[in-house]
Figure 1 (cartoon, rainbow, N blue to C red):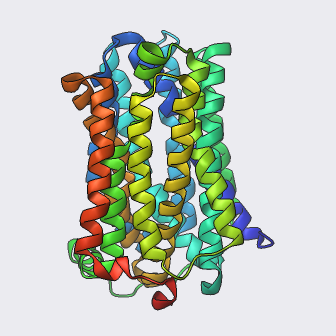
Figure 2: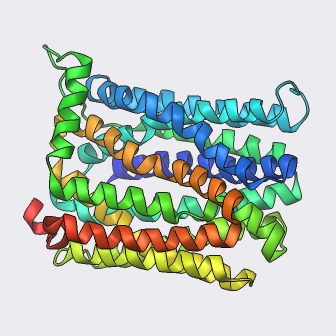
Length: 401
């Protein structure tokens, strides 16, 4: 944290996540208030992930060949457009399209988010020496999860106190602050390549690297399927109103609880960096995450539900730090943008696909059975990964240095 440029990069990260999370909690409340249908909550994730999938491979290529700092600032500015559009809809200034207009605004966020992760991961390796990657990843996780805690909490408070337009407006301000932080960052950029491979050949090179690396592929696949099937937080608005009987402030608490647990775990890992048996701990953490989701689905008490989500955050904090560290240590610098984009296709999209899956299953099975089934599948994913990826199961981080 004595590194000024690292602090500026962390400011960019926290402001972008704050903006995104405030929009997520507000638009979830907005849509459910209009429709009273949990499946419509799932469509929010689908509206974001489809454009994300289309843009992400090209975003990684651009991050590898263009100035990363300017690209990050431009992406942060574009991130502010979605909450501004949603504020006009919530205020009644723009009425045509109904929920379709809301989904259209969310689709723009999906395009922009495809750039944020690759920019951050590429610059992370430029502002820190290699021997500080493990601690840096832990601090990055703390910053990320702190934004996950405060973003939903602030968003839920603003919805209840000042209304949805105010929450959207503050989210736009946070995105603008992220752009300023990125523009103030001073970091050496890699020399431009005189001869660039064709775009699709370059993207394919990054894909071959990931799919040929058992440890990296195993960590990404584990996180993706665990979050996809075990991420019940997208159904929180329905749980709040149908089962737990709380208002928007309670929604903010539930959305923040997993991140609070992950912050606590990130602090512990920053003080006690993990090396030995990292793969085994990662697999156990994912299995624990699934168990917590089962507890959340079966709980009918608001505070017990929040407690299970807090425990799930502790488990997820281990997964986030381990996956980030593995990716930073295993990836060569000239491929960081493309590998990070593939990581985004695995992990960054899993929340949105998981939201669509959870909403669809809730419509078919009901809220509680959908969440319990997802937790059981997550535990199964951990077991299958341990069996199919022995190098990940026996991983010590020192093997990647």
